[in-house]
Image (cartoon, rainbow, N blue to C red; front, side):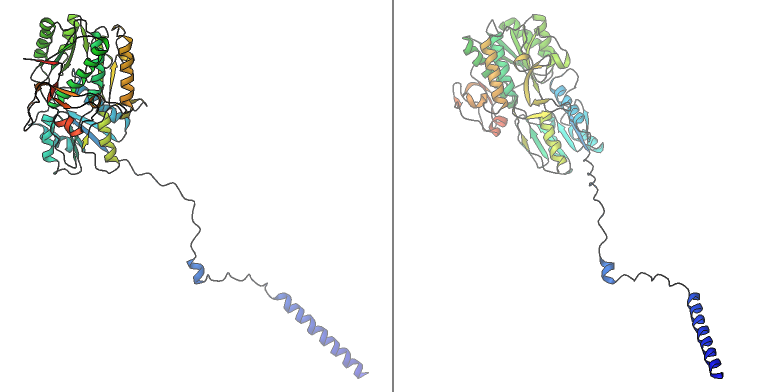
Length: 436
């Protein structure tokens, strides 16, 4: 009996112990989540994921100020007028280019004005004639970050930042000469010219070759009379010379290598044909009409200025001698592509520019069209095609006298060098009469 009680007691104790253990287990807190392990050194060094690449910001375009020193006034002139238009067209095309200028700049004022313009921000400074542009070379070393430039008359001095330039205007003048030969009925064509210089002689040579080729095609006898003013711009003297050519030499086609509008006025008054220079004077200025102006040639100096601007934008040195022709072009802000020089009249170009009242024979029209297209492709040039026969008149240069009359200075088919054309072409071609 006692043993039985002892067993029962033992069983009760065991049951109570088990129950206590179970209650203790239930009262323990739930285990918490283990903390994340500390990153290892290798993990710390692993590069972060690369973010999506954004397009690189374009650097701001270099600010350029083109400054032109005009030797004459702008209004009422074709030479400075064309340079002024070029500056405006460059500024219209490029938002980062500004155009500023000075007028009536002479040799003594070229440098002071240039330094004024540089102080205003100019980093391209141009003298639009040689006599007042050459002094700019004296300050080229002082301003190595400025590009200076000057038109070439005959001097070819350059420096790395002193550029010399001229367009091949003679190409368009040749086309004008073809038209002039067709227009004349008296056979007498007059030129009111500035003064003997390589630049003037070269341009007159282009016109002369065109006249002679046109006359040969039409079986005409022609005379080309040239009388000098002694200056680029002298309206009174230009008028007197124009009247002399008409009254005394029976000229019925008049052109000029001077800069005022006086010869055009005289041609209008006399009722004869006029051939223009440097700009489309009817379409650009509204001077006269196609009743008087048979044709003009238009010069786009912006072709040259654009090369300087592009070089500066690209951080390159500019070409130091530039002599582009009809094969070189400039695209205007509106997308129009224009060659360095071209024939124009009343806003029209090419053979369409010939006055509809001029009654130019078809064979001349066809030749003008053919030669213009060839020159624009760089396939033909009047100065290469023709022989240069001296008339015995011209401008004696240092160490280079005027060749005797009848001398063949250059044979047909030989291309004259750029240096020779720009600095040594010092004689009139056979077929020209220089009046005293």
